[in-house]
Image (cartoon, rainbow, N blue to C red; front, side, top):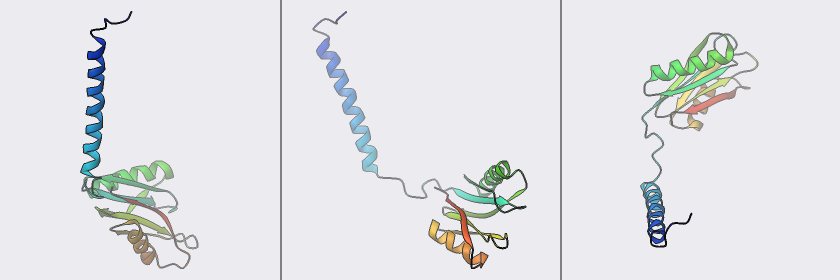
Length: 138
């Protein structure tokens, strides 16, 4: 059944208003700009298997302890053995470098991924070291 002719223009007008409201809201959000990289003021942690060094987990939370707990739980679930948090950062990035020749690993941190990776590799001090994982707080 078709609506009476008198109500069709009103329905179109309401639909047009809704469309305009959606566009205005999207434009306002875009004009506000993307939030800064560290808008959430979060902590990040990276954990690795203490037994093998092979499994890794990471977490982000509003405290370093919270991020550590998330990272350790994720790593333990993947590894099936004991994990430890080896790197963390507040409003930054954390990385783990691993030396396949010796099985050693070291964590590092920095304001961005490149700095965290460089810190982890420098602490590992192994010619064949490589980055296992790196994550940032936001």
